[in-house]
Image (cartoon, rainbow, N blue to C red):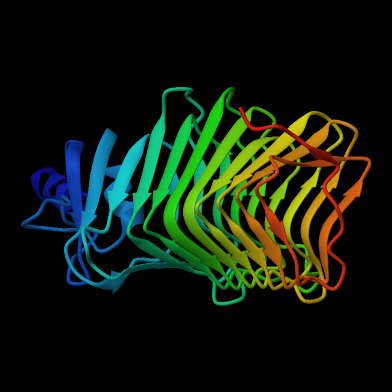
Length: 300
């Protein structure tokens, strides 16, 4: 009798699998599997439990894989598949991995909040986050909420689209940078039809070779009590028909603009104590009111 009881307990106990440096998910997978290529899991949430630190999770087909909390350095690479991550509340992805050397990379993913999720990617702590070839849309808050407490923290967003992230107050942002030790870089990014395109409250943010268009309240907004900076290069800032192209507020808040175009906004440039500095090679025209740069700097 005791022997049979032990057998039943063994059968009812979930199998324990060793952590792997590379795990896999599939629409046809099952979360009782070891997340191998031959036996994939169904969800990222299970796969990350079986992925070693600095490992990689790869989907092997087109599918929707729900939401995820990341607490270790890891790479999720869609590998060319149409991979969607979704949530109806909270965040589609939450990141809390505080090591200064921790790297999280998200590549080729589509995030959709269906107008209900509070954020697409919410970062509490990370050493470095890389977001490439991704789409973040339809959240009822910030597309990327970067509030990392790690010192320093880095966020790189490249070749991605952040669009249609709107809340009732109109203060949701495509990218919200509030990390006090944060350094954010956007390269070849489209930030379109959010409440605010890019909003910085602390740290630094650079925008290069990008497009910020049709964001309702402001396309680029810097508002900070302490030292904070936005650098803009070769970027189109346009189409905030009832709002502002570039806004700077704060005694130590500085925006630097080079080789960029500000057009089609209600107010092109606006400051409240803060500064918006030009290197003399920008085009500000066709706004209801163009405004003016605080200072014209000489290029090196």
